[in-house]
Length: 422
Image (cartoon, rainbow, N blue to C red; front, side):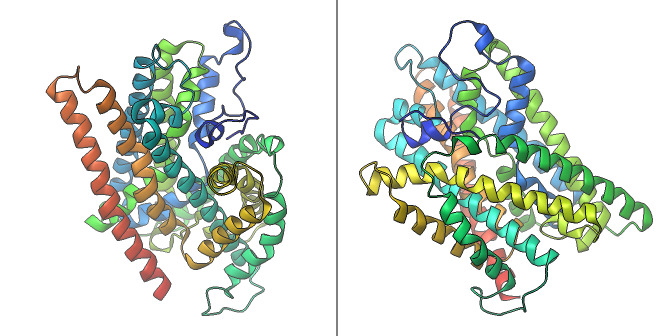
C-alpha cells in the first residue's frame, strides 16, 4: 500500500490511498475512482503473500472446512468494513475530516480510540514484516541449501540468510521518505498472481499424475488455526475508508466491495484446495517450496523474495512514525529504526513455520483490528438508535472476536512451540 507525504498521524499515513488511487486536491468526479478501479484497489489492498500459506492451512483443516472458513471470514470481514463506512457517514457532519481508521477511532472514543487503532495497525504491520523475513529466508534456504543445519535458532540456515539481509534492510529502512517504493505494491500483486498461476498449473499436473489421499474436515484446533490464517489473508480493513472516500459512486461502493471480496474468496478457496488436493499431507507451509526444481519454479520463488524484500521498508514506515512520535519527539531517528528492524529480524529467526505465524497474527492482532474494533465503534455510534437485534449483533461480534483472539492465539502458540521442538 502506498504512503503519502502528509504530516499526519500514523494511522492516516498508513492508510493513504493505494497506488492506483488518485490523491485528493482537485474538483470533479474525474479525480475519483470508477467502479472497476475501486474493484482493483480492493484487490491490491487485500491480496498478499499470505495466500501462499493457504494450501498448508487446508492440509490442517481439510479442503471442505478450509473453503467454508474462507467464505465465512470473507463475509464477516466485508460486514465489518461496511460498519466502518456506516460510522464515517453517520459522523460526517460532526467530524468532516475522518480520512482513516485512526481518525474514526479518535472521533468515536477520542484519544483511546486512536491509540487502540494505531497500536493494532503497528503490531500488524510489524508482524507482516516478520512474516516476510520468514518467507524469504525459508525460501532461500530451500533453493540454496549452502548452510549446515544448526539447533541454535540464531545460526540455523534460515537465520543466516536473515543475518545476510539485515545490513541491506537497515540501509533501506533508514530512508526518510519511501514514496518511490510505493509502486512495488502493484508489482507485488503481479508477482503474487504469477506465482499463483504457476502453482495452480503444478497442482493440476501433480494431481493428475498421482492423486494423494485427502480429508474434508479437521478437528477444533485445526478450525481455530484455519480461522487465524483466513483472517490474516483478508486483512485490509484499514484501507476501506480511504477506498470509499476515493470512490466516484459511493452509493455502489458496498456492491463493488462485496464483489471484490467475493472474487478474492473464491480465488483463495480454489488456490488453497487445489494445493492441498495435489500434495496431500506433503503440503508445505510455503506452497512454492512444493514446486519442482526447474527454472520457472526458481524464478517465481526468487521473484516473490525480491518483491517482499523491497516491500518491507514500506510496511515498516508506519511503525517508525509511531515510535518516533512517542519516543523521539516526532523527529527522524535512525538508531530507533535500526533497533526495530533488528527486533523484527530476531523474531523471524525464532519462528520456524511461515503459516503458523500467519495463524498467530490473524488470531490475535487481525481479529481485534478487523472484528472487535469495527463492532465496538458501530455500537458506540449507533447504539442509542438501534433496536435490540442490532445491538445484540454488535455485542455478539465483539464477544466472538475476543473469543477467537483468546482461543486462536492459544492454539497458534501451541503449534509454534510444537514446531520449534520438533
